[in-house]
Length: 256
Ligand SMILES: NC(=O)c1ccc[n+]([C@@H]2O[C@H](COP(=O)([O-])OP(=O)(O)OC[C@H]3O[C@@H](n4cnc5c(N)ncnc54)[C@H](OP(=O)(O)O)[C@@H]3O)[C@@H](O)[C@H]2O)c1
Image 1 (cartoon, rainbow, N blue to C red):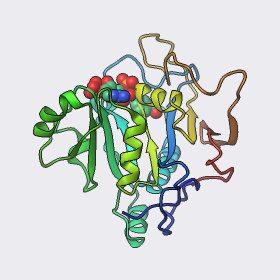
Image 2 (cartoon, helix red, strand yellow; image 1 turned 45 degrees about the horizontal axis):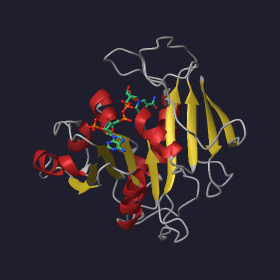
Image 3 (cartoon, rainbow, N blue to C red; image 1 turned 90 degrees about the horizontal axis):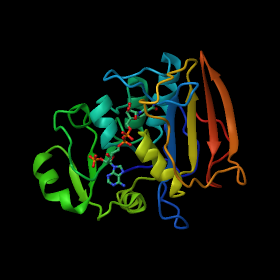
Image 4 (cartoon, protein in one colour; image 1 turned 135 degrees about the horizontal axis):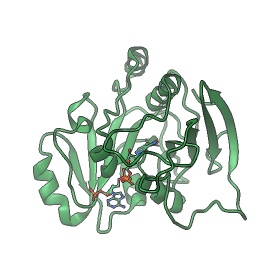
């Protein structure tokens, strides 16, 4: 699989340079992406998917996706949102193909219980490879459930995100975009496994404690005594993107 150089900012047209994952880290460059309301919610408490980004920001997200080798969401997000997780722009898909890459990045998820719907768009939309990291006790049932739809990988018990990243590196993934949800973002952040955070704030409140927030409680490496670095702030229509550099691997440059 071709890869974008780890640690470089995503560009509107994916880079063509093939690189290896840096030996110093042994894991892909990890970019977290999330949209919240002004009061920090990532969804409301209804069954409907809450739209936080606007059309222009969706285009930006599409370009960031196109610059990555793989996109990861938790099983909870597949169940709640049924996302497609493909590059939508024909121009960006063509640019990836011209660079010798598949039209869309590999789709990745993590599950302990293996409660995934084989009809979910994660599995049925697009030709991208799908990889499911599953906790050991549920591997057999999940492999049977997703036969022909995804590669199911035994990721231990309990499932360890660092192990997921090491395995993805072994599959040639140099740049990973993590698109949520709350549990997955919290794990990558608290484990110190994130290089960059794209946080978009939509101009409204949810105001309902039953709704999920960006992350829950946890021991985060960034706190009042260790502040994260703001790499960029950008207004995109009626939303604001803040790009936080969470490791020295994050360049200060402006992404797509
Ligand atoms: N605004 C945004 O940018 C955005 C983006 C994405 C999602 N969301 C929202 O986020 C919410 C979903 O978040 P969520 O926290 O419920 O779900 P999530 O983080 O997407 O997924 C959590 C699930 O992933 C699996 N998982 C995660 N870490 C694991 C580990 N270490 N070991 C084993 N399994 C692991 C488990 O699946 P099993 O239960 O199958 O074992 C767990 O229940 C939805 O409301 C969605 O709309 C918002």
